[in-house]
Structure formats: structure tokens, C-alpha cells
Amino acid sequence: MTFEPLSRQSVSDQVFGRLRDAIVSGRYPAGDALPSERELATAFGVNRHAIREALRRLQQLGLVRVSQGGATRVLDWRATAGLDLAMALTGARDVLPVRTLIRDVLEMRACIGADAARLCAQRATGQQRRAVVEAVETYASAAPDLERMGAADRDLWRRIIEGSGNVAYLLAYNSLTAGDLAVGSVPPHRRTAELLDVTAHRNLAELIADGDAGGAEAVARALLAVPVGAPGEIGAA
Amino acid sequence: MTFEPLSRQSVSDQVFGRLRDAIVSGRYPAGDALPSERELATAFGVNRHAIREALRRLQQLGLVRVSQGGATRVLDWRATAGLDLAMALTGARDVLPVRTLIRDVLEMRACIGADAARLCAQRATGQQRRAVVEAVETYASAAPDLERMGAADRDLWRRIIEGSGNVAYLLAYNSLTAGDLAVGSVPPHRRTAELLDVTAHRNLAELIADGDAGGAEAVARALLAVPVGAPGEIGAA
DNA sequence: GTCTGACAACTGGTCCAACCAGTTGACGGG
DNA sequence: CCCGTCAACTGGTTGGACCAGTTGTCAGAC
Image 1 (cartoon, rainbow over the protein chains, first blue to last red):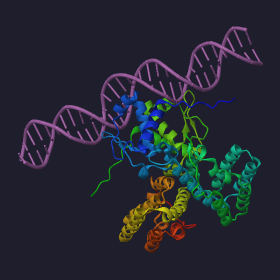
Image 2: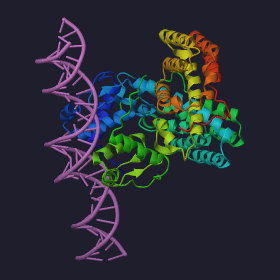
Image 3: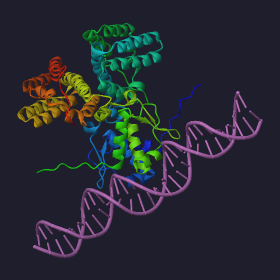
Image 4: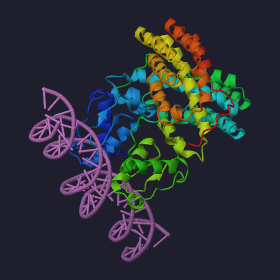
């Protein structure tokens, strides 16, 4: 029997989570003023400093604008928040179906993955190409253990993106794979077909190693294509 | 004579900026322990709470991991930071050429823009299509004022992305357009050619309005293509 | 009456000082 | 040599005080 390390949320973490969900779900409409720090402190039953730390993080995410003297106002996250918010967007079930969100993330992954494969074939160093080939072997040898294959697959794509030399793609990939979304709540049948296609993965690695940009892009695009109308539903979680 | 509102950085803002730049530029190597909050407080000559607020934001960005009892450790931002960091990456001039970074951002914009145009033509509502057509007219009528055209262009692309119905694209677009990068420090000659192509923009809007996904994607891809080997250099800023 | 300035009552920003809680490593007894 | 204890760190939380900027009110000057 193994235990996972239980998460100890600090007070300000909890405040942050609650306010974040309240904002993205629209319970605090954009433009409205948040209660004052002192009010929030008494409302949550915590010290004002904890509230402040939470508000700083919300500001960092682009959810609120705080201004000395004036009130802290809620921003329209669709206009001001960055991609890092994506991994926290599951808290907006009411206003944004999780299923659509997963489709969006998969679409973006496909878009970036294909272009990264192209660029990787085009301008990766010899060492980076070897790393890709190596990763695809690790991936293939993990079959048929789905969990290990998934981990190896993530590692493979990370190497491809590193080979593309595009830092923006790398950071976006981090945003997409972090959090609950891509990792936890993607229904298996939206991923397993792709995950099990060892031949295509090997093919992709070979094209990258050979420097065939067009071919690598085409294979990657086909591999990552988002199935239309998949009946995937998110579980009770 | 008009004055811009002068920026008043709070103490914790400054601490945040300094530590962020120190980390992304590698002065605090990944894996190393940051000085304790109390040490940082005396070093910066500020109160510990200011340090804590800055550290919270760094944690939010994925640059450090703080753990009670243990030290606050620097993370490898290439592995843990999200796209929101991109707009702050100009502080890493020494380790990451700004020119490459701009190329990366433009590449990602092209990749997402083309796919968003495709999806917009495919599944935008009638109202969203009209908004795109309307925006392209505003853009065209702004010629030849480059500044106004730029603003109208950003608005046009925002509408296209909204029409695509992909929230991830929308957030990524926010990440890319926020901050100093895409707006301020892109050398004009890497953008003006695209910006002045009124015909192509009109064409794009028309294809979207007609629901021609393939055509819209092709036009968008051509329009946003990143010129290879452009001799653009960043100014002294 | 209208404008203007002072002022009071907010807002967030900063600081101090203390204590709680968890981690780490050294040190001494087994 | 091993292992538990404990002191000396680390971050987490609290209370209270005061500074700084914003906002709206309200009396006085025009």
C-alpha cells in the first residue's frame, strides 16, 4: 500500500482558490469591486496578510486589478488572463463546460505539436535529434503499460518542442500539461488511440532525425488530430 | 503636452521584479535554495511580508517552490513555468537573446492565428462573423496611421480567436500580446509588411464570413508567416 | 447657484513583533 | 553503529499600528 503525499493547503492558498473560482465562474462580475481586504479577512476568518497574498496571486494571473486608495476591481479574464489560467479553469464548470475546455486544450496541443515537429526537423541540433529518437524508444518499450506510455509520450513531446528551439512553445506546453486538465481529467478514449500508435510515433521520430520538416509536420498533425464529436464526458470528479 | 501616468512600483513589486530577473537570467541556478525570507528582508531593507508577497507571485509563475520548514528552492523555469512568463522573459537578455524570443512569439502567433482562422470560419456564430467583418473595416479605414492600424489589427485577431470558440487560444493570445514583447519591442520591419496588407485582411474576413475554413487558414498562414533571417535587431532599450 | 477647497472616511501599502508549525541536522545515549 | 531527542533553522499566521492614496461630502468663497 502506498500513500500519496497529502496536500496541505495554506490559508492563503485556500483564499486564492475560492476567490479565483468565484471570479472565473462569474460570481464576481467583471468590473465589480471586490470587498475590501479587511472585509475579506473577517469574512474568511483569517488575517489580512493572508488575503493580501491571495490577491497578489490573482493579480499575477490577471484576474483583478488592485490600486492603492481605490478598490480592488475584478477584470474580465477573457481579456486579461494568460494561458496559465487554463489549468485553473475547471473551477468554472457552470459558465464553461469542462468538455469544451478539454477539446480546446487538445486542439492547441495539436496545433503547437505539429508546428514544433516541423521546426524540430528543420533546426534541431544533432544531440536534440538523438534525444527524440531515444525518447521514442523509451516510449515504445513501455507498451502496453498505458501509464508509463503516457509519461514517456509527454517526455517525447517535450524533447520535440525543445528541438524546435521555440521558447514560447515550451512555456505553452508547460501551461497545458500542468494542472488538472491535460493530465487528470482527459477521458481515456480521447487519448488512447493516439497513445497506442507506436508506428506513427516511430515514423515521426525518423522524419525528424532525417530533417524532413514537411513530413514530420504531417505525421504529427495526423497523430494529434482532435476527434470531432467524440462523446467523451467528464466523470463525477 | 500630455503626460503618461507614471508607474508607481510598490516595494513588493520591485522585489518580485528583481528576483524574477535574477532567476530567469540564471543568477540563481535551478535547484539552489533562495535565501530565507528573513535574510531577503534585511538584504532588500524591507519587511518580511513584502518578500512573502513577491515569493507568492514567483511561485504562481512557476519559478520557485516554497515549502514550510524547508528552504524555498529555485525551479527550472524551462520545465515548470507557463506561457505567462514569456512577457517577463526580456529580463533574461544574457541567457536568451531577445531577438530569438521575438521570433518565437511571432511563430506562435502565426501558428495559433492560422488555426483560429480555420476554426472561426468553421464554427463561428453569425454574430461573430459579422464582428470580424466589422473589425476588418475599422482596420482598413485606419490606414495609413500605423499606430491605429496596429490597434485595429489586434482587435481583429481577438475577434477571430473569439470566433474560433477556443478558450485556450484566447488566453494564449492574451499572454502573447501582454507585456513588453509583442507590443513594444518588435522591430517595425517585422510587422509593417503584414500590417499594411489590407487586401489580404479583407480577403481573410471574407473567407471567414463565407465559412471557407481551408481558405481562411491558408490566407492567415501566409499573412502571419515569420520572415526568415530578418536582420531585425532590438534597439538600445 | 456654482465652483472650490478642506476634510473625514474609506481604500490599499508597509512595518513591527511575536508566535505557530514543519524540516533539518547535530549530538548524545543506547 | 544506530536511533531518538532536541535545538536551530525554515516558512505560516496572527495582531496591531501607522503611512499613503482615493473618494465623496460639505462648508465656504465666488
